[in-house]
Amino acid sequence: MSEDITKAFLLAAGLGTRLRPLTDTIPKCLAPIHGTPLLGIWLGICQQLGIRDVLINTHHFAQEVRTWAQQQKSPVRIHLFHEENLLGSAGTVAANRDFIGGDDDFFIFYADNLVDADLEALKSFHLRHSGVMTIALFHTPKPENCGIVSLDESGRITSFEEKPLHPQSDLGNAGIYLARRGLFELLPRRPVMDFGRDVIPGLAGQAWGYVLDGHLLDIGTPENYQRALAEWPIAGGRHLSVNSTLGGPSMGVQKK
Image (cartoon, rainbow, N blue to C red):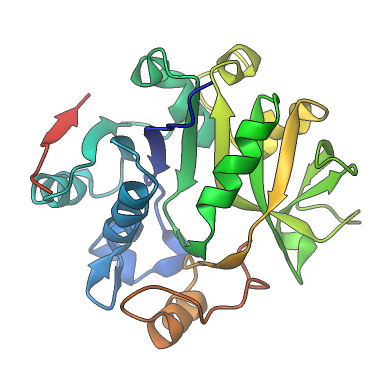
């Protein structure tokens, strides 16, 4: 199996209703952090990981995202996929199987998270097991607000529950996945679906979890967005607690 993982989904089409009034004028994925939109931060992460193609889904203020993408000068090729009606996180991936082509492995990122963590270690862990998916995890102080995972001693996921009333652990879904092509065969046959609600609970025994070494923050609330502005350095993280409330030349833009 090749250790080069060159494609990623960057899920960015959410409405950002919790961030109003900011998202009354821009999409959440373009919320600026010290002048750099979230998508710009993620594009840099993708470049560092050796990703060459990223698919970004659009919906809310799609034209603004398209304009931003056309202005980028990055070796990472941007492919835009517009959703007239939101498909959900897993629905977007299912609708774009052709984007992966013959690649064995690919990343899936939730664009509304700020992440400063060792994703190369996550990739190395993924390549050492044969499961269909690796889910990045973090220790959360509020497990009732997250998708919560239980693991066996090898790191295999034994259970997953979205926002449980009685959490079995404090290991929360960080919104970063590595998947294999076999995942497509396990996705439900429906157009709209969510990873946490509709897919991951059925992957117990077939997916692994990896606790991130680093820091992350979901910027989806006004409080967390202000926290990001106050604490996230221009050059990248290393100040945000992992116990957060996460619940070259231009290669052009390819549209679908």
